[in-house]
Image (cartoon, rainbow, N blue to C red; front, side, top):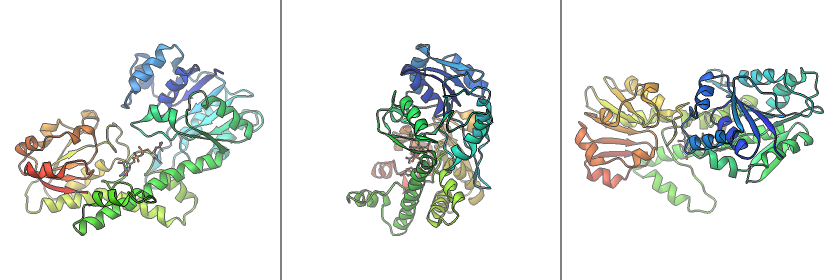
Length: 417
Ligand code: SAJ
């Protein structure tokens, strides 16, 4: 069954999903409020760095079934993939993009249409925010429309594969709505499609990301304990994880991205008595400060120190800097280390977006390197070549990606998290 589908929001999820639907026979119209995204698409170009996505989108455009549109096209199914930004002060979700998307559908929806919300939202949003706006059409969201929440679960950096292979949770306001959405997702999803109601689907997505946040916080706390005892935390975690019921995550400079540092707050907001989730947030948010502290100890006695901060994006091989711990590290370094100056290098983030410099410019004359992001390029760094360029060969490996022995042999003092 092929459908006419309008995708609202062509970001990290909407764009690959629109291309996926088009390559699976549907007629897809992609809408975004940002005209630059549409212009680039019209020229066969995309605005996101994601492995394989450019070729995938070009293939979809070549089918003639993916059409970027400057206004929302009337369709049989509407997929809402808009951002749900987060107010860092109030710790609340900003649902204005979801509300605006819903309002823009009011003149378009007709009896029998499918409206799917994929954006990550506080539990209850589909029922309490989306449905009432759709009800202003005069149609009943339960009996006249199929209104559904289907959370996206793909891992940035592996989006295309995960869009197809991951299980999907489909939660409709009614069983008929769920069935209508399942029919659409079946056209490209190879994983299992699990059905539930909308509120539970929203909740499950938040639980998945909160679980990960808590587990990463445990790894970070473990790393701090281990370092204080002269133990390599990564070796300890690797061995502990050989136990069949243990799966400790990896320590790092903190948790970034638009999902894991944000989603636990949607649960905390709904139920304030959540000490474990709150503690995990605090532990992970404190990690950039810990990295700066380790760096400060390495620079003891150095006047006018130069730091080369390698990696700005929130994780390896992506260009996304949202909530990135590196941004906090860059801000804290001069605040906590008097006279310190910072040069940033990230091969994945365009230099004009963050005042970055090339690798050599960042490293020349530096007193310490901080590996803040696990980009593949950094795994391949040549320690001898870098040591020759630096004033003092020292490195804080916050991602645990360097070969400690090789770097020590090249003359580096190595601190590894
Ligand atoms: N991180 C660690 N230690 C780890 C794992 C991750 O410090 O052991 C850090 C990363 O470096 C990064 C942050 O946590 O800064 C988050 O990275 P991630 O790769 O764990 O997750 P995201 O944010 O890229 O994607 C998550 C995924 N959720 C889960 O794995 C439960 C993804 O499947 C979701 O689709 C996505 O959030 C989302 O959109 O919600």
